[in-house]
Length: 500
Image (cartoon, rainbow, N blue to C red; front, side, top):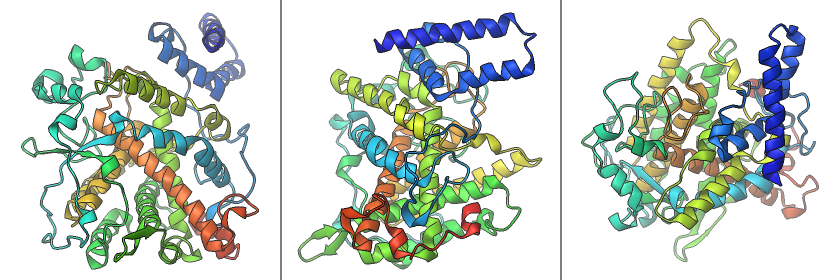
């Protein structure tokens, strides 16, 4: 029945396309109305579903126009204020703070939690044995929980081992920045390369072919408090925020791209903080773990740091937008780990996420990337931001805690993948392996993207639940959402924070 409904929509779309082609003399208003009809979330979702079901028929369908950030017709899930007394739409997005909490709690987080537990998404390839280029590596944390348990070779999915046994020159022509030809054996699935940093991602620094990489089972190395803190951790974050591009980032006239970049890093930092305070070693003698409400209040739950929570929401929506934009690739990908039943389940979960109808109704455009890179010096600024991101990834080599370093590298690669998807000139509508002219996503990029998205989604939920605990209202808060407004005495969000 669903297939018939989708085909019916396809027939309508084809008819609209024929009308556009045959009547090029249509007045501009009429042509704009047709384009708007194609961009409507239900129609756009139907096109994406049909392309996933039948690439041959999908190729005949019209391209979906890029939607602008127009909030008309967007139905908000709720009208209450959300965490940290943040009300209204998240800046640059057609999604309210309260809607984020509802759609995250009820729809997306459960799906993401299932996705990252699948065999495909639980293994991350990374280099942990790199030297710090800035200072001696003297900041190792004190707990055994800081170390990382690497995968044994037989634990790594067999198709991955076989793919990486192929010489790099047989699978990808690295010598040319223009030639994007792929051998037939990699076109049917997400690209696999030896480097952990992904494939031709300008936001990641170039790797060293001689570096040894390890596979990490993320389920056995959860993100939590490790004992890595104090001056060593502060030195790392201090080096990140002291980058020249972050100076005067809140000043009037600062390019929006620069503020977006800062907010992504700040939002990732807030997410890491949320997970540390939520899974904290309360008593080392009895090995009692649980939320540290005092630290939460200090780091995320008071009026002076409300911008940190706002940036967490922003980062979540930014990465979610990247996942939605790459939906044609992700829905059609072959998540091959050699386990057909699990791989089929992974594909089903992914399609449920990227084609989520509730998300399309309440938050169809999580972030509006179309307004960026419009200035006269956009290319120069982009190059500066990319150089800064390269510096930040190298600073993370100085983290003196294996597990912290691993999660930091995963989340930075996830951000870099989001930037690659949203700001690439290449089309997201191609095959997973990246036909000529289309966007190419590598396996480790997709793994990092969705583990980052899950971490951000879980961070939003941590803020909500710990806010309830901190307010003393438990789960009976009348708003049913975040309760930081009780802690902050419902003080309004400062205007400069909304604009930053």
